[in-house]
Length: 83
Image (tube, rainbow, N blue to C red; front, top):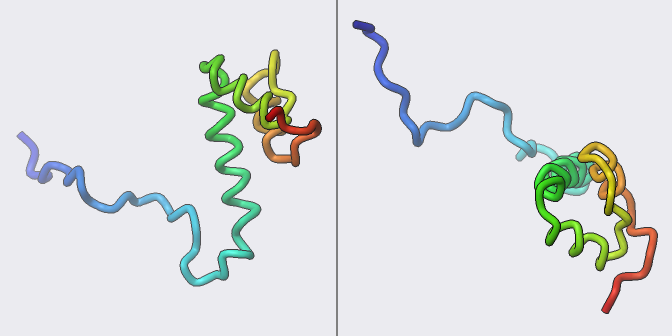
């Protein structure tokens, strides 16, 4: 039996925060956008509906790998969005 208490599921994670509260938001927008692009790419890799949504927004992501989708999403759309 261990003397270690169980982990508190509501405790703050040990990982650093995604943003630094001591820095202006404008200085962090690039990092946050990159993180969001990578997160969206992971989700899009398994979602035809999300691929279609990105395509309708002007992002050419159809038929691309997760890594390629992330790179596309880190840039401005290359086509006009579909209304």
